[in-house]
Length: 582
Image (cartoon, rainbow, N blue to C red):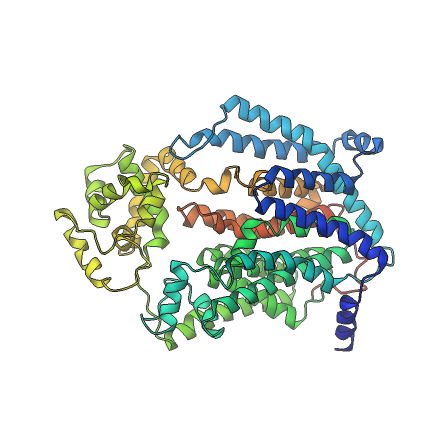
């Protein structure tokens, strides 16, 4: 306890003049990038970020460029960067005029991607390696304490600006539905994740208070990342510029100021990534508070947002295997805590609160919209399969949704999932089996939106079986439909410019491949939070909402910094601060 109080006092102490000279320019640079991006000046924000990279890497020195092209260490990372950018340009024409706003001819897209990778790769690789080299040297030096409180405030200030725009909170259909459940107006159910509904209830049904908690938790998470990177030797200017600029863009800021489940799930994902980084760096004494924190964060990643269970399974399996192979009982304890949290919420709290489990069509939206796409785009389908499709889905209603001129700017999946006309639609003669669904939903604030979603949730197993059959018969058609319904995953976001998640992922890949082959085998688990986020969106979502990628926008920069700092291999110079897991 005494040591903890001493550390807290050190974090809260006023920073020294030298610390301020390094910290203030980095914070201002980060604020400038985030602010320019939020105001729509994406290329000015990119220019400011490039200037920060030039300053951090010393690009004006002739030795820098000589070092950039010397040897072959830059070849693989640059090739990976070029392949990623070329793949994005190649996929762009997959979306036709209905889905895309601009095109790249295939050969131009491939050439542009490879050339950009070849030109940008070497200096970026050299900058990352210089940063890692300086960090390893700084670990041997006596450095001032990290100004934790002041960094926390530097992160909190721009978040408060985002909140001020929508104060006290931004309402939504999801929030109103949750409040109606908590007020007893409709039965408590798990259409929205039970954990998030209970969190809102614990906070007195005050969405504004939930937003305040989210902002404080986000600032605390980024401060924890910054403090650890600082202890690993990273310079304050680069640290503040990267985290304040790369992690506080409009996607993260707007989500933090909204009382929706995406931000709590992303914060839990961030805690999981933090502990995975420290486990891989082998500088953590994994005591019971850490075990409980990791296990609970991993569990609530899925409990707050169901597609987070992809990470729960992947990271849980990795912890289990690592704990068994290395005989580290602490990791097995974290897995046990994770399982206990899931059982307590879904196995104990749900029955005690008499939570209902209505059929949820959104859970199978990818399969339902895929079946419709095969029918609408003239795919191969037998008469027996068509009969099953008409038994499972209201196809006359589908045709009406797709012909609606008010939703011409929507994708096919968005038209089907977002049309809200539950009380006005009259089923046709061949849709009479769906009439009870409309009658049962009368008078309820309908979170399921429409007859298509209601029908899709009635027989999920048969719907999945039919979709898999049609996928095997029409693999190209179904794959392109998935791509078109998830363009936010693989397309460059023109509104974000150089801060698009595609460039974030490219930066992560570049930093990952900066190390040797042995380093790649040792560090790959830190990719799990980002990889599972992308995979879960592709598998479970079809409405192309950018908020689904919130963990990627929030954690890509810390992930890239980790790979860059650890590229030289693990060292044990920080074991005086903490010890490896046992």
